[in-house]
Length: 299
Length: 125
Image 1 (cartoon, chains in turn green, blue):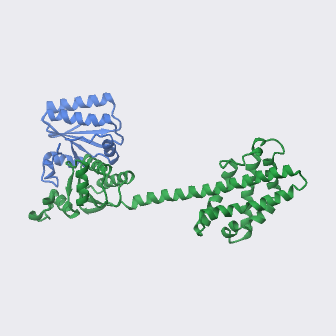
Image 2 (cartoon, helix red, strand yellow):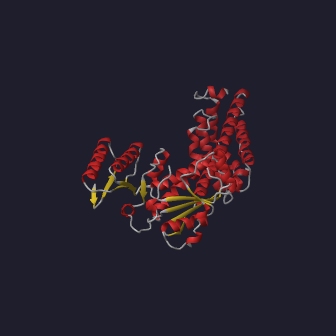
Image 3 (cartoon, helix red, strand yellow):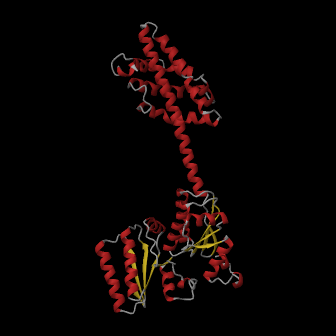
């Protein structure tokens, strides 16, 4: 882009555009306030839309004056990044797709270029063309910044929700004095196993539990990694002085474990949560379990 | 280090350096040998950080105590410490564990406590 090479010199197209934006701030902002993007986001008052538009124009002018019309990381954008993110987010919430938001941001370009060309009517055709190109590139960069901010916002939301899901999906239940259980539901991955391990061990300390039951009835598949995580949890619980019981291994999973050649020999396993509880109660000597059907048969 | 009848209570706190660990192991061995100690309780509730070195020290203390006919119980290990040890691959097989020092003492005394049946529990190899 030629305007980029000559940036910094006096009278370069980028600088010219920056000056123009400052000069015509009010007019551009007034025109922007009528575009779909500003009209739909700032529904309360037109003045608010004009103010927001002025802030964006100020930022664009700073970027243009610095000669960084193609740079989405330009310092000038940091001031308005949050505002742009909010604007894009508001449009997304209103049901606009990312392509539509992108087009709406693009609709901000014609007013700027029209005003610019009108402003430079005395200059040579060559100069006008260069300035118009610089303005177009600048508006393209703005579009990129908006989309980038919107995407980052989306990604942050997904991350936050994933963390929330991790926390809510692993409740530790106190079944009896000294017995806690974690019913695991859904696929276990490394991150989730880590959370399970941590919450389980924390509750072992809090509840003063001597027995911890890991119920995997709701886990659809078990691979070597998941089995390894289970073993780790069991080993860590043992180090803390609690016994870990794995319950709810379904026939298909049992078969998989055997096929994979995984050794769960050091882990106490029971067919169901009830059997595991019976085992733990028996070991505690609570005297509640009927000695005939103490559930130990399932081993 | 504290002697409670037949039991030797060792409380570890903060960082354990090479020299102090060496000294500790020696002290424990000598105390067991020179008295009628039948059990050693290592209280780890004050330890927040752990490395492979501490894991090895624990295993060595247990092995030495075992040679001198005393049982070792590790008590009060924090979740973070347990997780780290497991991640390091140090599951300390053969070492007995308890939630608190009290439980460990009960375990060693073989009382008719809730630990009744756990006293005989052994890790399979």
